[in-house]
Image (cartoon, rainbow, N blue to C red; front, side):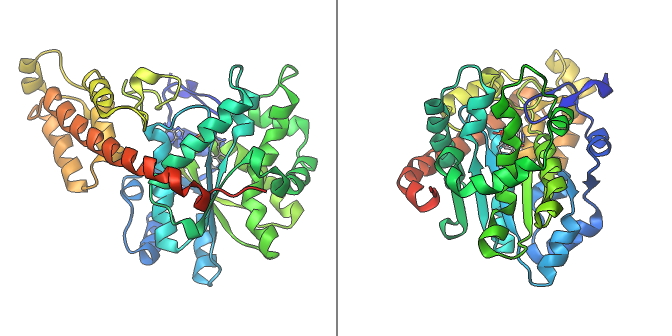
Length: 372
Ligand code: TYM
């Protein structure tokens, strides 16, 4: 059932209806008018905007109003380091890099090693710290500007965040936390407090500069719940509400479901050997017919095909080529094997390059990572 899906920061399941999600969460769709305004400043529109992958927002118009008045915004995003980075995580970060370059924006990147410790049965604080540093390599490898980017682990930057976290926590009741996140009497008390920590970077720059600094948060829509809370408390603390820009989920290789770190066979990790990634792609679900003959006669269905989705989301920047691929698939002009081999080649090349940059990033950690 299409109505049966769940999207929370800790669980995404079912067939997601992204339009319904906008209604459920009370966000806004990104309009043509907003796209025009972004393009005016950024010069180019990122494919993820042109393709409606970043499709929803909160107060994006206000961020642009402020920008046009000369009040620059900061960017804030993050990662819960529970394992290696997969391609889905990269999506909002690739987009954040585009925003940093286009709007000359400072970025705060929060690694919530505390969150993943609190919400996992099996991960120790040592594990989440180790993953945090591994994940930071992926962020750095994407080419963020070290002069404009600060990355921090919560456990290593807590003194700088704690006062703000307390101010947030004091204004969020247990009943709100239960309603927003579904906590119950068996939830550990750290997890109930945690949303106040994820709120902090939205206010940190205002606090540091002692003036209202607008903040834009790019993320997938699963993180919205935290920021509903953040936005509710902002006026009580005298800070501007952070704005958000939300993306849809990069799918798994099954064609449905989001890419998820717990499903290793159908997710591609930035640390996968290119040959391993290729094999995952060759084994992936497609929208093709059972036989070549049928495929040529009836054509395939790109809408349910993971291979097509991969091109659409990340691996083909040219809109015309995406359109051609779609058409060709529909009329049976291309076979699944060909499509898979082409994508496997692209993904393997991307991974080879990314992994080299990732290794170089080990020497740059100190330029990016801040501590108390
Ligand atoms: P985490 O580690 O679950 O996810 C990191 C970022 O990746 C997004 N994401 C995806 N985007 C596209 N396709 C997918 N399949 C996919 N899976 C995950 C998430 O929305 C997120 O943007 N609590 C957070 C960490 C965090 C954070 C933030 C995230 C702290 N501060 C501010 C965004 C903004 C977390 O566990 O994210």
